[in-house]
Image (cartoon, rainbow, N blue to C red; front, side):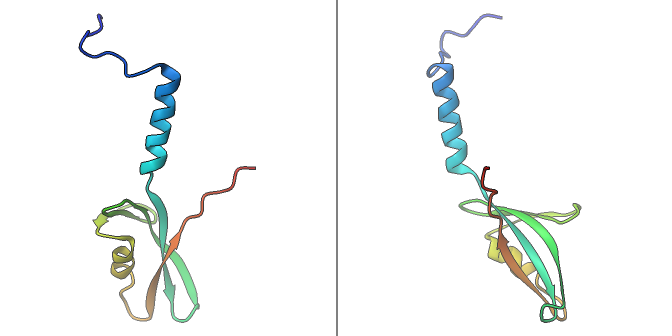
Amino acid sequence: MTEDPKRAALCGGDEFTELVAEMVADEAPRLFAVVQELGEREDGRIAAWGMAFDDHADVVRHGGGSWLSVSSPDRACRLLGCGPDITARLVWVTPPTPE
C-alpha cells in the first residue's frame, strides 16, 4: 500500500499523541448517576448512569435496557423522579485520585 502524497502527517508521533490526549481531556463528558429515593431517605437505588456533554446528556438505565438522550442531566433527573413517594437526585461522579 502506498501513501497518498496529499495526506501527509500533521506532526511526529509523540506530538500527535499529546495533541490527541489534550483533545480527549478537553471534550470528555462528565459522568453522573441519577439516584431514586423512596420516601424520606427510606431507601434508594441508582436508576441510571449518564454522560453530560456541553449540549446534551446521554443516559442509560442501570442494569441496561433503555437509553435516552436529553437536553441536560437535570432533565434526566426530572424524568426519572416521577412516581408516588419517589424523588430523584443527580450525583456527579468524582474521578478517583491516583495513588
